[in-house]
Image (cartoon, rainbow, N blue to C red; front, side, top):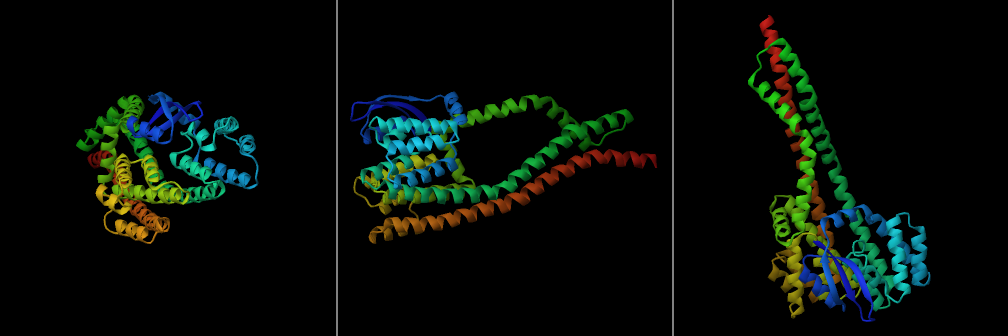
Length: 400
């Protein structure tokens, strides 16, 4: 998704500035108008601005703690402006402290908390803002914040499990790569000088390894800039609607990894939809919010199409079939939830099923990565060592 800087007018005649993430300009305009804003200006942020914002991040854990503290103080009956003042004083993250102070100023000037949060959409996601807004409308902010905390807690647990599963393969890959680079960059040139002094005739594999070592040493100063350029190009292309869609569709086509991406999208759909419906957000608005929350652009487009289908009177299960998402068990479970008039409970059950399936897929990926990495790195190390010691064995044979 791209990030846009917006200037909008609200119903009180005030002009607000905010940064908003959206799949494209048209989707952003439709979203702002549906929220009752008068759009004055929309401008896409440049890559440099986005990169600068990375230096002012607020972690998931900090936002989770903020939500819990917010709930405690709201339950205590403290006015919202004082609540935010207390939270800003206690916040260690200097950038987040300024944001909370800005929220307090907005609320003090007559804005609702959700309206003030919209000016800081780089921190508060559409899910967060819509949930708080629903709680404000129904005068049930405490209940909604509790549901938001439960949702964040489930996300934290799942994210922690996935990250912990991938730590060992990543460490193994980095360590193996460093060892290979050390062998090629230092050990091979050292042996090359020894062989040159002895005037030994080198085997083919050794000659090729020496040439590769020389090429690597000559090109090494350019590797880091090239890697940075490739990373920037990928990041820029992934934010463009057309290329981003191609990249995300390619991710879905990769064996095993594509299954993980698909399960993550559907899991997030069910979790967020349950949260928003429980909070009192209308179904169509809830689905549109999900389309903004899903990072995969292919699924984001499908969820947007699903929202349009539901808005013209179709059931959720029918809309899922139309977009190609509701295949097999998923659409049947959604249909059962609709017929029983307890869709949130069914979405919760589906979330558990897909959460377990996602963990299983990640474990499968890790179980395949570990031996594959060991095999590849071991083979590379064997080739390097063979290229080094083969001339030694030849010279030993000649001496005999």
